[in-house]
Length: 277
Image (cartoon, rainbow, N blue to C red):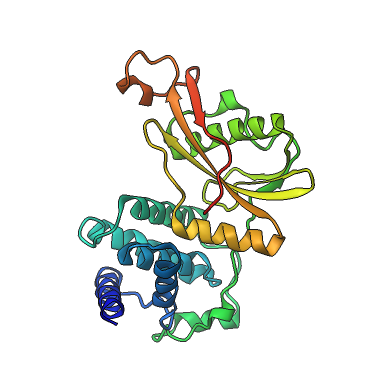
């Protein structure tokens, strides 16, 4: 009972900080807190990280383009003010910022909102039913069976920036899995998409989430990404796997030089596909 009260008190305090930073009511009718509580119970997440994951999940799945865009801006505004004082882990902060920046980068979708979507933009943004929230379509997953375009050639990819790291690692993982007898059916050029790729081996389908890091890091996908991966895989009758790849300078003479990447000296550390649990 005491644990539940502490958990709720922390979430109320975080929601207060959110409103103070953004002046936005997410219109979740308590569903963010419920999602966060389930995440705490099922995966042992810290309250602060579970709450932020709930906000990001709610934003990512919002069907109203304009409000989704506003919420993404709200996430960045909240992090700009409170990321170092709200008890959030670096992993959850980075993952939340990444998703919000990708949503904003997409812009507000073309066309006008439907009559149902317009209901989200009154003075009172409360009352969005969970059944109305549908996953955002993965538009950038492209059917492929090889390394053919639209995936850029490895030498055409800049090794700088998170997207460059992701694309370099994606090339590497596709090549490794292909040599291991996997058939690559679909992959995504967008590191925010889930799954990163879909592969089949011996009649078994796998949804794979790729996490690319630069030496010495070896990051694990954020909890909300794993949840989304598991949900989509279950709906497709597939198995979930994580591909964690660390990029490093394979011509480095010292440990410090291993994090300095150039197009012609990138090596990959990869232990193979990992289960999510």
